[in-house]
Amino acid sequence: MAILLTPARTARLFAAVAVQQQAFPSQQHPVPLPHCPACRRRPHQFILKADGTSLDFIGCGHAFALTREALLAGLEAQRAV
Ligand SMILES: [Zn+2]
Image (cartoon, rainbow, N blue to C red; front, top):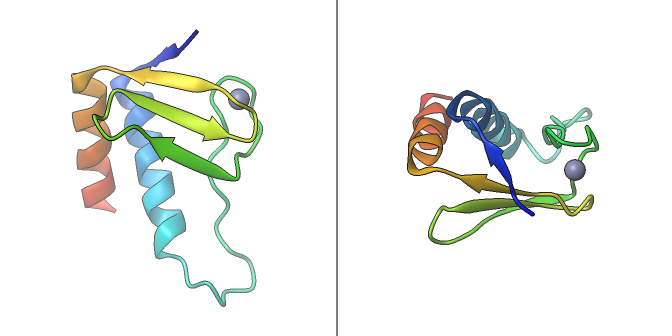
């Protein structure tokens, strides 16, 4: 069952992913991906569903449902990085 992510939590996650993607690959200490909010494990990868309604953490297998409000908060936070 998908867990609902709040807009604030989505914003933090998306911003952390944006920071991670901007890090130089050659950097000695690359920025890690953010923890899964449910189990605190670090995923190998995130998959945001094309319609923006869910975010899957590949590794621990948790899936989070995003409301439209949460998605917009996340995208705004990502642009602000
Ligand atoms: Zn998890």
